[in-house]
Image 1 (cartoon, helix red, strand yellow):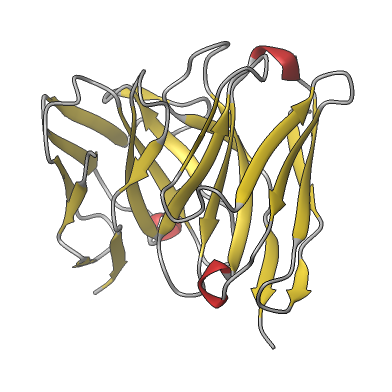
Image 2: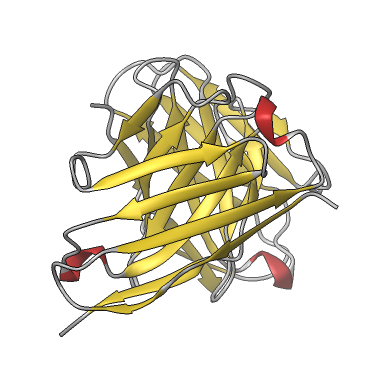
Amino acid sequence: EIVLTQSPATLSLSPGERATLSCRASQNIDNYLAWYQQKPGQAPRLLIYDTANRATGIPVRFSGSGSGADFTLTISSLEPDDFAIYYCQHKGQWPPGATFGPGTKVDIK
Amino acid sequence: QVQLVESGGGVVQPGRSLRLSCAASGFTFSSYGMHWVRQAPGKGLAWVAVISYEGSTEYYADSVKGRFTISRDNSKNTLSLQMNSLRAEDTAVYYCAKETVPTAGFAFDIWGQGTMVTVSS
């Protein structure tokens, strides 16, 4: 079973600053890594899939990188709307189940 | 527009059953694998179950295996989750989610708004 670890648990930053979020897998997961943003009372929103591909309508300030077992979500310049919880997620071909990381909360400093 | 709408949540006693539904619209439902994901109050996301696009393959999280059954009706564009022998720890918002790519996607691009299930005596 693949386990995802996210760090830090909380990231306190100011608008305009750069945010760097980390996700580490317990083994090589190739590029099958996605990132989601969730705000209170809302469903998660897909930001990045297959490590580095932005989902439809996602601003260019969001970017994903990494390979193997280490992945990063970067928000180049935080907007007020970006303060939220971010989850990484993996799903492989077999078994077909998915795994989520515990999340990183990005809050206003 | 592309949309998923869950229903069927509520308050149920431990040991009882509940059936959740997810109505899909705006896309070719029969071409996509579908998942249930839950989120306990104040906690993170937890994957629950998946069913393949044609319904031939199901897979469950260990925490619900043997108690929950995922199914789909491609003629009605509907996904279901039958939850039996419910426990307090099953209390959560339940989301249905669509895979990104037909037949075999690795992320979830469309989510429903969620339906709350509370297991309590």
